[in-house]
Image (cartoon, rainbow, N blue to C red; front, side, top):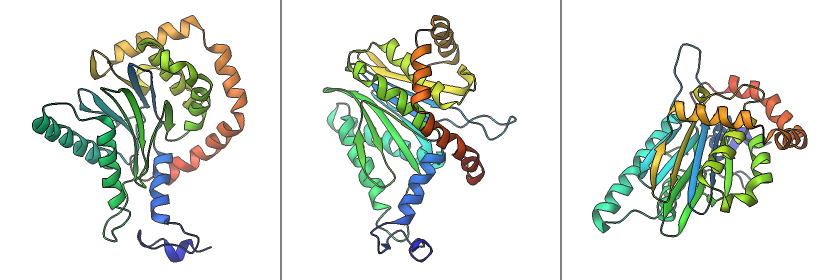
Length: 274
């Protein structure tokens, strides 16, 4: 009702108490390719879908290394994600130079949220159109945070963002109770199955996904395609999760159908590479 009158400026409130430009930025996250994060007590895993604009182009990077103990996966406007990941990298370097110790994950997430919040309170700025899953390891263990364009941040055991992420959330909600005690390989397996849920029937291969891991005794690293493909082949041959995956698909049919129905509209509505 009031949208056309109150969405021209990020600092203007609607009578309903909403900031429409911030909501538009959050909608850009929903249109981006899916990104997934999950953690145990000792490891954190990030995974994302590689989506190219055409068959002639390569995909944009969606997972970035920030420091040896922190990495991020993004969904939304890739350019904004690169800028924020560079900011995070700079903060880690400055903290390490000053205190000679790694920057705690929670402190970095708060600084990132504060930076995003400023863009919701200045008329000459726009909100960042990207959501970030921040995975890291510090003295208190493994962490996974989600940073929202609104400046809010939340810590999760497992989470998924981006287009068709509801199917992955349904899978993760069924499995998350076992994640704290999961091994590194089990986390990667669950991340790959969650990614497969977002593909809506498309075959899962190493060329359509990226996986990164950080954990105790293991610096943040992005797995190469050969390693990812070997893991995919191993898990598909085992067939352990076939029944569970089928039931997940049935239970989340309503949400998945809604996501699938809006997929075409999302692709048409996104003129920028997200």
